[in-house]
Every structure is written in C-alpha cells, then in structure tokens.
Length: 204
Image (cartoon, rainbow, N blue to C red):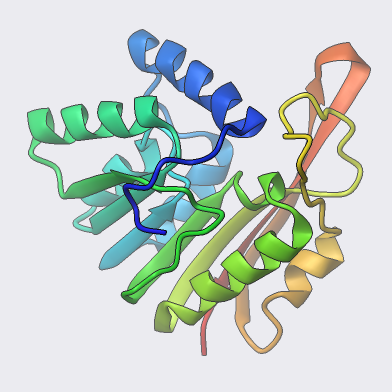
C-alpha cells in the first residue's frame, strides 16, 4: 500500500484527526515532553513516523535536518504542508496508512512517538522491525509507547492495540546502545492512568 492509499475506518485515526483539526486551529506548536527528549538526538535525514501536527518535524528542520513526515490524519498532513510552505522548511509530509506502510529508503534517525500501541501486537512488531531495518548504522530510533499499566483505553480502536511492558520495549533493541530510557505516568479522565515508556536507541 503506498503513501496515498486511504485507510479503512479506524477509531484511533478518527480520534486524532478530530483532535488535530482543533489543535491546528489553536496554533498548538510547542513540543511535548517526549518530543523534547527526541530532539537533541536528531540529525541528517529524519523520518517522523506518525508525526501528528509536525511540531517535532519542524523543530528538527530548524536544526538543519531534512524531515519526511508521515501520518494517517488528513488534517495533520494538510497543516504540515501549509506550515512548511509558509516557512520554507525542509519538511515533506504525506498521508499514509502506517499499519501497512513499507519503507523504501534509509534514514539517519527515525522517530515513532505515541503510535505503535494503536496497532495489534503482530502489526506493531512488524512495523518496528521495518523501522529498525531502515535506520542507518550509527543512527537512532526514538520510540515512545503506552505500556502495561495504562488504564485509559478510550482512544483505542476495537480492532486491536498493543501494550508492551517497559522490559519488552528495551528488549526490542537488544545489541543496540540505549542512549536514554524513561518511564512516565499521567493522570487521565475517570481516574485512569496513561503510562508511557520512551527509549532512544543507537544502531550499531
């Protein structure tokens, strides 16, 4: 499936597309905490896989990176293209069904923040394998996911999701150098919790 193929209806994509429509109108451009962790490690050719509104993509471009930004949200991609055109930034956005997207080029850095948990575990594992295979030697993968212990489930599609343990996240990068790894918990509606793990791993 190519980058321009339309995704099947998906609760998670619809949830975030509505959110991005609202946020782009509000001008929400600040990096979140996970993106702030990633930014110092980014250089050269960067893939922002599941880029959302592209705030990290534009911050990386400002540091001299050339960024390929992919997301399933039409609202997010339209926002990024408009912002890139206005600012003449080296950010190139495409709409993509990321559950089935296969990379065809290699990058110095690949970022997947807040994405893989929305896939069933088999798909998440396959996609992560593809990302790891397409980062160049000496480059980094920045991965951020919700993990076990998360109790806020409203954003997940009924067709599947995947919550790793923190140990399982680290195990995905066996043989790589773990540059940074952090866990974080956030209060969520209804007395629930969002529990995240963020890892920055350098390929041998």
